[in-house]
Structure formats: structure tokens, C-alpha cells
Image 1 (cartoon, rainbow over the protein chains, first blue to last red):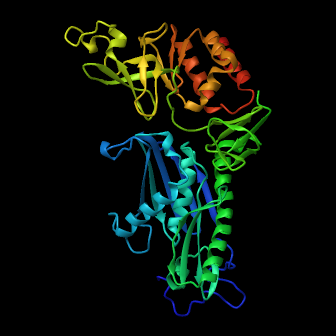
Image 2 (cartoon, rainbow over the protein chains, first blue to last red; image 1 turned 45 degrees about the vertical axis):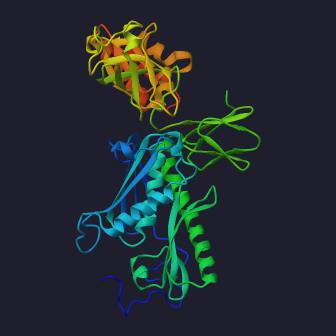
Image 3 (cartoon, each protein chain N blue to C red; image 1 turned 180 degrees about the horizontal axis):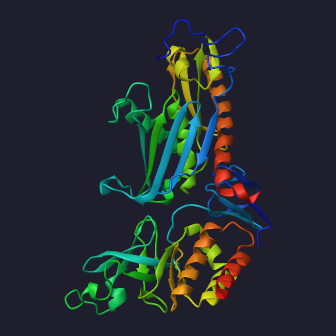
Length: 244
Length: 226
């Protein structure tokens, strides 16, 4: 467990990775918009073995009142992993890591949402990770964008996210849990494809400047693939039976 | 009418060129980008998107249905199905000579009462100011509240009110539509009430169907015979 298997081959001589993918191939991604009746907007994503449910409320009253901003609406994000989402029970209280990812996702969504239209209100995003397998922050960010669009929050663009990284001295797209543990670098990227702007960029590991550039390029290309699936999810919900 | 309609989602380029961006679109470089899920309409010199989801955002002069949630000694607070609370000053109901000593607010409107009201003023710095001093406005005494999606309100009204007129004529019900997605149906007969309610819920669910008018008409007729 944990991917620290000395016998595991991360990348074989034919360029096939430990789970059978090519170096520029993302995992299987399924996105569904809607699904939760009581939330104003919702989305469900399966990103390989990641399963994440997102609910969005708002714009609505801010409680506690002192958090509200008279100039703009505020965005609040909670990223939470279920106790059963990983192979050893995770304590349900928010951990250091979850608080950090909540903040990172919030800051990655803020350039996209146009909350200045709703001063003195709050938009709440609740992310529940039902099953985790590496790259949950990217999958969560992708699903949160769809849920926000489903809730009718005005957005400049949707944020698509995917991680690229360096595994066995090669730049690969969509790092999974094993590759994350045993690989050399992991770079989650959030990207707004229509505006061509990056909203999230983290890097864990060491890359040369050339590798860094290539890693960003690979990630951005991956985001464009994810973006198409986000669009498809919303089209299916809203225009599915209308032709077009 | 619009010459080009398109289904769009946030980030979609509606069109490019010298257009004026109106509702729910932004100008980015030379492209006009949609900010919501909706239907885009391109006019001669402007572009707008009609949203399919989202909460009600108050607009001046909109007729809304509000529910009294509380009152202070000077005003009522109304839930208007929006992210803001509707503010109805007591002077609007009691007139200029309103006095906090002699007039008791709960004698006119109690918590839980439904009110047909108009948005008198609203800007981003304050909660929407509401008035009921107009013809056809004020407390609603009887009827059933039906909640529909805000984005389906224009469909329920129909072109020049055709849809709602059809429902009213078919059931003998009086329907008050609030722009905030709250609808009050009042009818003498229980049968007509149930039918009107069903028709409204049908519009809410099947708003995207092209021949909805015929469908509703069929539904209204079919029950008459039975």
C-alpha cells in the first residue's frame, strides 16, 4: 500500500505507466451536473478512482454577519474527505491538509466567479471526497466549477484542473496516487481555457526550467480535455433533450 | 427578435465583433463570453444571455410575491426568494401620519402573510425597498403558493401573457405571478385550483418543450370532460 512498492515499474520501456496509461493520457473522467435536490447547484465527478460530490449554496445571507463584504460577495469553500475515502480510516475532523486545500481551491475559483454582482452575500461550496486516489484537489476544483455554473453563479469561465508531473524522469499527465508517492514531481494546474489564464499552480518536487515549462504545457493541454467534459456535463443537464 | 439563438455555458464565446454586451455576458478582447448557463440572443448591436438557472436578483419595478418573516417597530422584512431581504417600511402601509405609538404593525401584516409587492428601489448598497401602495398590490388573502424556478417565469407568462391567460381561462383561476418565481393561485372551485396548479408545475418542468402551449391546452381540456 501507499505505492512504495520497490518492484513496481512506474514507466516501462514502451512508455506505458503503472496503470496502463500512456504518458499523455488522463484517467477516465465522468462528470455529472446536478443530482442534489436541496443544493442550489451540484456536481459529481469520477476522476479515475476519485469520487467527489460538490454542493453549492448561494448567493445567500452571510452568517456570521461580520464576514460579509459591502463591496462584493464572498466565496467560502470546504473541502472534506469522508472517513471511508482512504484505505485507513481518516478522522472526520478537518485536518491541516484539508484546510489548506479548501483555501487553495477557493483562491483558484475566485478569479472565475463574478461575486461583485452580489454584494453582502456569500456563496458556499461544499466538497465531499467520497473516494480518494491522488489528484483530488484537481478533481474537486473541476467539479466545483461545474456545480457553481449549475447554481447559476455568473462566471467569467469555468476552471478546469488536472495535475501533471515527473515520473521516472518523464513528464506525464494526470499523476495518480502511486505516481504521486513514488514520482519525482507533482504539479496541479487550474486553468480557464477560454480566457487562457492559470488560476492554480502548485509544485511539489524538483524540476529543471525546461521540465517546468513542459510540465505546464502538458497540464494546460490536459485542462482543455477536462474542460470539454465539463461543458458536456452542463450541456447534458440543460440542453440534453433539445437537440442543438 | 433575435436572429441567432444558441445554448451557452460559462466561458462560451457567444460571438465576436463590435457588439454591446448586455445581460450575463462580458467583453473579453474582441470576444463576447457568456457568464451563465442559458440561451444567447444576438440583436443588431447587442448581445445578451437568458439564464436557465440562478437565484432571483431584484430589479426595480418587478412584481414579486413576498412572505413576511419579521417586523420591527418601523418596517416589515419580507422573504422574496432572493439573496436579499425585502424591506417594507410601515409608512408605505399606514401613510404619512404613521406613528410608532398609535399604529401596531402586526395589525396589518403578520409573520407568514403573503404579500403582492413591487420593488420600489434597489441598488447594490442596500436591501431592496418594497412598496404595496399601488393597485392590485397588498396582502394576499386567499390562494395557494406555488414555487417555480425564477428562470421559467417568462415561459409561464408566455408571449404577451398568452400562456397565463390560457391557464386562467381554462380553470377560472386568478393567478398572480411574482418575478421572483413565486406564484399565487386563487380559485373558487377546488377542481380549478388543482388544475391550474398542475398546469403551472407542468410549465416549470417542461419549459423547454417547443409545443408546450398545445400540451397545456390538452391538459386543461381533457379534465373538463371527465
